[in-house]
Image 1 (cartoon, helix red, strand yellow):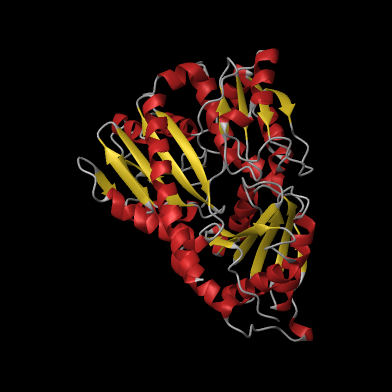
Image 2 (cartoon, helix red, strand yellow):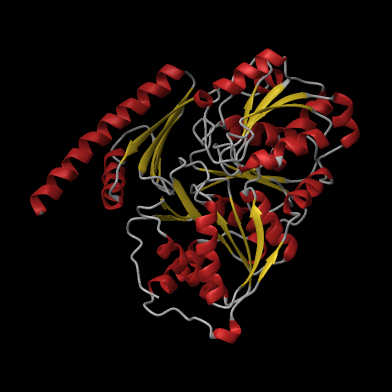
Length: 478
C-alpha cells in the first residue's frame, strides 16, 4: 500500500480532516483506515458517516482499509457522531471510525477515531496510531482472513430509547409541558434523530433545514449569526425555544422564546447549572481553556470544583474519567463553549442530542423560560476571530512568538496549557492553533462587548505583525 504523507491534512485530537478531492483522497483514507486496523489489532469496528455528499465515497474507502487488515465492520450507516460512539459502547466494539468534518464547510470531510467502547483517542493513542501510518509497510491479511461487514440498522432508535430512559428525563413532566420547539439541523445528520426525540419527549415540533442531504443551506457551525431562519421561525410560530446543531449533531445552540440566538457558551452553562442544582453529591466540572467564565460562576454557585484542560473533547473526557475513578460518588460534567456537553455517566463524547433532553427537562420541571434561565446567570461578552493560515508551520511559529510577547505583559496571568490564555481580573484573551481548520483562533471575553471586541482586535493586529515578520523570514530563506 503506497505511502502518502499527511502534511496536507489537519491532524489533531479530533482526527484527520481535509478538503475532498484535494488533501483528502480515497487513497489516503484507505491507508488511514488500514493503519487504524493495525492499531486496533483486527477487531470489531463501528463505522458511520454524516450527511456530507462525500460520505459514501469515504465509507467505501474506510471499508477497504479495515477489511484488508482483518477487521469486522459494524456499519451503522448515516448517523450523528454521538450515535456512532454510543453504538460502539453498546456493542463493546474494539474501535470506531466516524466519517465527519463536524462543523467544517461542506467541501471538507474527515475521520474521527475512537478506541474500545467509543473512547476517543488520547495523545499517546494518536501518536501510536500515526507511527503505524507512517510505517512504510502496513500489515495486511491474506485472502482467507479478510474482515466481514454487519449492518446495524437501528442505531438511531437505540440512541433515542436510551435518552428517554436517562436519569434526568421525566417523561410525565415533559409531556405535560408540551413545549413548542423549532429544530434546525442545518440539513446535517441531526435531521434524522432530533425531531424524532423531541416528539417522543412530548414537544410540538417545527423543522427548519431538516433534510439530511448535505447541502448545508447555512454554515455548518451554528453560531448565532448563522441562525436567522431559525430565529424567524421561533418568532412566527410562537415557540418556547429553538435548537440548532452542527453537521454531525455533537453540538447544540439555543434560541430563546423571543427569537434571540444565544451564545453557544450558554449551552454547557445551562445544562451544568440545572443538573448540579438537582444533586447533593460532590461535583466536578471539566471545561476547556477557551470556555467562558460563565462555567466558573456555575461551579462557584454549586460548590463544584472546576478543572480546565486543552481544547478537544478527548482532553475533557480523559480528565472526567480520572475524576470519576478517584471520586466514584461524585457527579462529573464536562463540556466546551462550542455548545458541546458531556453528560455524567453517559458516554465518552459531546452529545448534542442528549443535551436536548436536558434542556427540555429543565423547562418542563421549572416552568421557566429560556430567557429567565439565561438571566439567572452572569452576563459576559465574547468576541472570536479566525486568522486564516494555510501553513501549519507558520501557525505553530506564530503561537510560539506570541507566547513570548504576552509573557512580558504586567498584571496578568499567563496560561500556556493550550496555546495562550492571558487573564486579567476583568477580561481574558486566548490564542490557539485550530485542530480542525487551517486557522489560528482568537477568543476574548469581558464584561462588555466593546471591551471584548477591542481586546480581540488589538490581539489580531499584534498577530498580523508577527505573521508579516515570519513570512519575510521565510522568503529570505527560499
